[in-house]
Length: 443
Image (cartoon, rainbow, N blue to C red; front, side):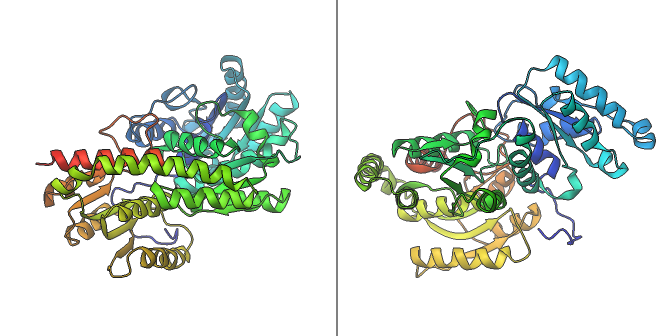
């Protein structure tokens, strides 16, 4: 969204930059956030992001137990740098970590606390501390992800030695935002499984088993893979500084065509043995086709060929549409809820239009860029669709127009999601199972 746009957004599903930064830091093992802001920032992030992202917990050092300076009126008036110094020392005493990351909120940035000076002071005492400027007014949750990603890569060398020698077959994964992508853990696991199956080493950077050692290896990669607009800046930085090429896929791969195409592009870029790639693709496609055959009778009995509306972020939308079109579903309305630079809408519209015309030359598909709940509901209401793919926010309009809704995007508060995924070959099977079950039991 254009930050100069002063219109009011009802029930936005895009939180602030601070939330994006905090959920990134708390998703890396043995990395501890130190929040320099008011008491409400961390609890708002926990309740407004974690709890409505498949009911995620707060992890080792996030959520309600996140370290915070909890500044009050006194620090706002007279400055809170001494309070931050105290909080850094106390956190290091209590929390064992490989890295401590000071995250600033709106209040402390507005009053001009010298946070870099406190960080430098800690570094001079050989404490592994860095800081990231993350006031909420800087942008939305996607900006918070981007600035945190970039700053971690840039500043880590101040704490740890970071080599820049290439590691053959090493790839970094960017553009999957913890919690904002409700299925992020399962999505990263599936990407890792696919890429490791063709002989690569994979830095997914967040979640189980991903720690500072993974981040130290980021400059060593042969290739960076980007799956949404929100990893491009980091990939470009690494291209400029370390000459690491990147591939931008726009969206996570789902199902047969997009997943196989994704694997082939990566394989071609890294000159992986074609026979190995073809064998893996053949096995995975055969398995997915086997499941599609198993559901054929059910498919026709319950008429799964539905016209649908999808409400989702850029990094998810196209992959899901491609798979559903492959198995006979018909997209009527596409609503993108994350909006980047001013010219992004036009560029993405052209890109999506090209893709959809290749898939559906005879269909008219309506594309919208919108995050206002009331406007989204109105669009869906006028679309006359038979199925909604969206978030828990679409429950109300689903009831109103008597159409089933499959939850695929943030926020989701009426399900518990751990490592579930809808991407790749395995995820496509799960997505089809869930949609078929939903339609079978609706009404």
